[in-house]
Amino acid sequence: MFDYETLRVIWWALIGVLLAAFAIMDGFDFGVAALLRVLGRDEHERHVLLETIEPTWEGNQVWFVLGGGAVFAAWPLLYAASFSGLYVAMFVLLLAFIIRPVGFNFREKVENPHWTRIWDYGLVTSGIIVMTVCGVAFGNLFLGLPFHYDGDLRLVWAGSFFQLFHPFALLCGLVSLSMLLTHGAAWASMKADESIAVRAARIARLTSLVYVLLFVLAGIWLAYGIPGYAVAGPVITDGVSNPLAKQVAVGSSWFAGYLTHPFFWVAPVIAFIGALGVQLFVARQGFLGFFSSCLSVAGTICSAGFALFPFLLPSSLDPRSSLTVWDASSSQGTLFLMMCLAAVFLPIIILYTTWVFRVMRGRVSLEQVRKSHHMY
Image (cartoon, rainbow, N blue to C red; front, side, top):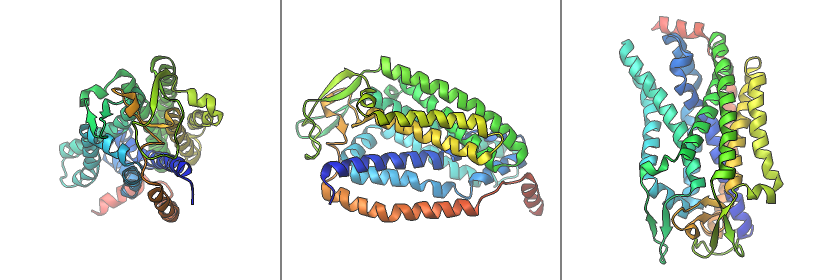
């Protein structure tokens, strides 16, 4: 049986994997939805774009469900603090999730261009909201969230929804938005009709440049303008989950972990290599362009996770109440049992997802869409 410290690190890594998988698999869905009215110049072209994501979007959301379930079971204190304190933000996020399937189905119910346009903009809005809110959430982790625990470990939250819109958090939202717009455009370049793919490749290259500039700016701001957190004194890595059993110092750099663990630098390097790959391949080799975008997404999320380590949810009110990998997890037995289940079911999900995308490979052509519309 794994020791408690190892299990905690494994589950920290698994949460990162699930977040990256969610961003990669669902990110291109929302990216395509956000670009629907930009890439699609008429109803047939918009149908092509929607048909590139409609067969798989519902299955892609399994990564969102897995991530939420894993946080609930492996990190109960993190789940309770974040889902309770960020209730309004979570509600907005889930509402955007709900609009998407409604938009897919309702836009076809009435043959009226005004009706269709309303639901198209609903899809665009839902995509932009999800991509931006996720980035704003990551930005607020570095700023610290306004909560603390009393002596009986009862959570006290003192913030409001509008306090989340700090300029740095908004910048992180723009990083996420430009990154996933690139991801969606790279997907459209690979899957849509050649005439649409050309436009999608141009947009992917443009948004990729914007992403790199914003990512670098956010890194500079984080290094020099946002005080970092560090656990002061001895670190108890295998003790009971009690956030108040430690001391936290504020004022160090969030990149201190990159000096302690040099391999952390692999993550931002992969993010930049992915952005470069988008520039080189998206217009000529669709799959390589999309794969490069996947690398960029994974590298960005890992970069943020490595910078935060070992913190999961820093507190701006009482740094000692901050949740870390070492004091916010479930019991050792629970983590081990869940790891065994993940070792069985995660490969099954990955294999099934791979099979589905292999079956659905190939482009969606305008000719196919026009023929299907003519039949009806």
